[in-house]
Length: 285
Image (cartoon, rainbow, N blue to C red):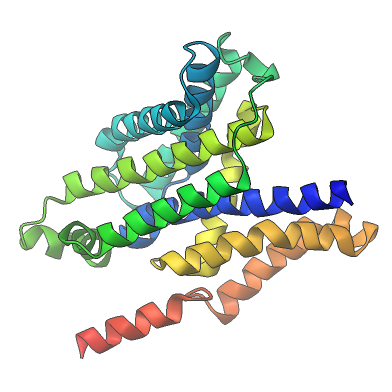
């Protein structure tokens, strides 16, 4: 019974971390319209930075989480300045390339443990800390999106040329969105590291970025609560399919892919996207 209890606690905790990742990517892709394929990379940067801050510098846990998030935000700024002048597929390819570069760097650095990763990380993160951080992230994002800055993000997504004509510095706002999203992803990475006590560069590869992107597509782009719902479903669904039967467990990723394909055909705006679109139609009218 104790094992069963800890198993469910782990799923709920991972769900909270995924919610932070989903809403932060939603800021970049859903609200600002910039397709990023390296969000898991910023998660990994935050995980490694916060872990090394504790193991090598002796930082307290809370300070290490903030430190890791700031380092991820710094890398978000560094990659954002040259790449966010690109659009669409070109931006996606550039962020994908950055993710692969960082993965190979982490695999070859001695301080990061190379391909063996980092072990012996103290387990400090728990479900309460994760959801406390998730509430803070969601609250801050809602405040940002209800401000002039958030309106500028949406204007860039809808029509970048029109936004520039209205006097919005689109380059600066796109970089700001990228930095904020990277900061929150770095925070999620730190929470992840201090919960599982082991990190490896492969934990933060391309497939993890695709998984996070799938969460916001499933829930509904440009909707914070849709991103939360998508994160919850994609966290729980593979575990549910695994428990149904050994046969289905082997093909759970096939079912997962079929679900996304069905969503794109039947409801391309996502599970909670219709409300946002209806609101936009009312505003246009």
